[in-house]
Length: 72
Image 1 (cartoon, one colour):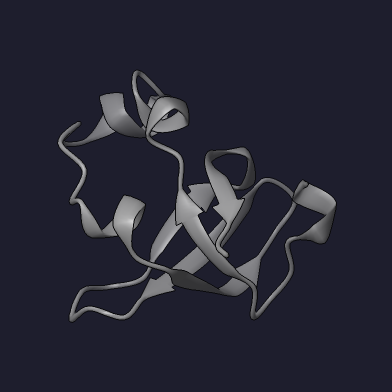
Image 2: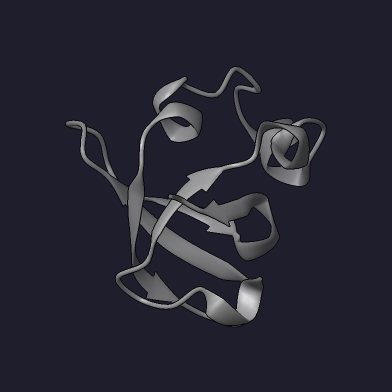
């Protein structure tokens, strides 16, 4: 699935992949519901991470590609 992800793709975060992840341990592990319930757009990528812009008034967030799924 990661091969299909590219800039401009609409994605959602996968709760099970974020639980107990390094990202959850490095900051507040209570992720906002909008990253799981709404669609975000990939605006930049590197080998392991995607910069996702959610359509709420918050900063963009870097998430590992394996923590994302393509939105319907």
